[in-house]
Image (cartoon, rainbow, N blue to C red):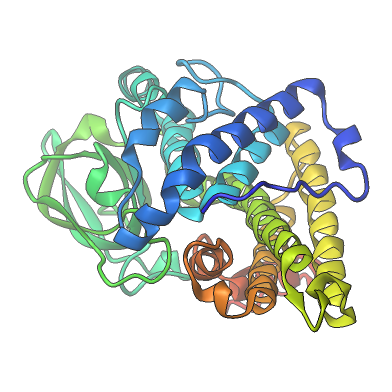
Length: 390
């Protein structure tokens, strides 16, 4: 059930946005309200991805929105972040799709690909005519991507890849996978593996209680031979893959704000209308404390990502700053979902309300693109100069 959204702008952060940034946000906000929320409950319940929305999002310029050229919108980092915020306000699965398409697939092709690779894939991906996925995580290598086992061996004019990737968003619907593998010299490189290539299969993970409106797959590469020209020539070492993750983590930091805004709005609306002991629960001190905490933390999160976006547009955002944004704002969204579920009582476990869906979804977002603990260690190293990873 779609309910009116009540924006939260307690510290007038609206004044810090440009006219174009507000226009982008309001356009996506209307799209989410009119096209996403009326159908997302059904898709989450049935475990299906709302693929019919992809052409609409492409037409709006949401795919690779912060990239330049090749049919991309070329928006600044703040406008892009606001897109991620509004999409996640609708559902984490939808934001994940757009984030993977742009930050994890289009970005590496744009940053590390050949001219021919860019011309072939980027315009089609911006139009939603080609879907991508990003294959880095493996069954035994999640937080430690340097332990990857996938190998790519050069044989004449081809690379033969063997390995497996796990928890891959868009995996089984992707036309091309960005697969990371070690070459004969042990260096990690990126490869374009197209759907239908012999030896390449994708199968969906089943039984998810989180991100149910998103496609999550395992990729299997067994003697998968691809043309040598499918190597992303600018990749070399783990740094390139981590640069892609930083792009995605930045968008997730904004997405956390969107999820928190969704459940806060619902909890506030519910509290005003739910009458107990002769008055709305919004009049009770315990409920006001929950709402005050959510509003305060959301406001701080809004200021954090806005500053992060300005730094990114200036070319000054560091990986540790992005980690702070992802770590703080996803934690915030998780706590807001928990509090909103409490305020809704038994109704909070019903999928006609948003709180339970966001509560489930944020558990995945809390883990992927660097777990909360990993981002804690990234910040710890930045602050102390000592790495706790080894």
